[in-house]
Image 1 (cartoon, rainbow, N blue to C red):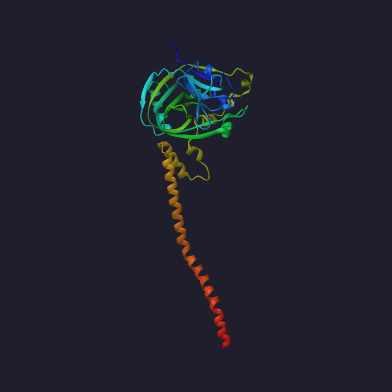
Image 2: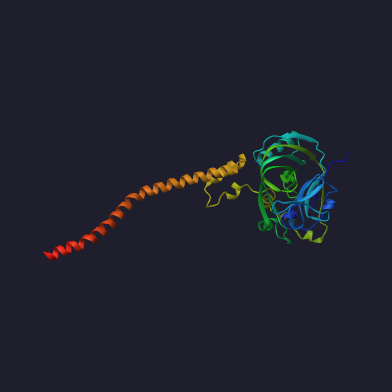
Length: 327
């Protein structure tokens, strides 16, 4: 049997530095794999390859199947053989899912190998993002996404997660760790996943020890200093930051609130935790207003007494004066 191969188009370093021109077409990509993920020319949406069909999730989360001539600047695909099939129980968060998958690949001593996984299941929540096209050269992916990226969520939905794992030493070739794209069962919604909660699912996992990389052929590719690609930026745009990380250190954000949000993300109950935070702050504001009201009551009584006294004096002074004149 032919050795299973991870076929990759270009490198993540090149994409991060702004090389988003088409390297190959979708038609050529699908000759090398039936499952995978990536993006399209000029970062025009998120790519999800399932069952040998290539779909695009646009900036609203809507999905369409792309034509074979569509250009591909970056992607990673393989032919899924489903060497290991196993059930997955409830996963409260994306971190819990990553941990479960890490344990599975550790069982096979696979932390230094590549892996591709397909998970079909029912998801309580899927938080994802995608982007619209932005034609540019030498403008970093982070700057492009700051202009074009949009977040969206799906609830109570059946679908497929395409999961790709690259070991840490391959950082720059691709994003180290797990990378998830989602496609709904009816193939109408999807995107790049940064948070989720799953009720149950079935995973099919393949360990891959061979990679083939198709680099761009045009001379413009050689004008990019790939070593200058920031590892932190690559991690931020590919893996995404959690909400608590984005808010941490902001002067207007109390540390207790950041910690509560972090706990909510870990448990997969961010909305419930935010409701609790809001209720807590409502109670705090009400308590503060009650205290201020109690403190102000004596001053208000004195102030009102002074006003009433002034009015009374203004009413009776003329009478007193008339009495004095009469005398």
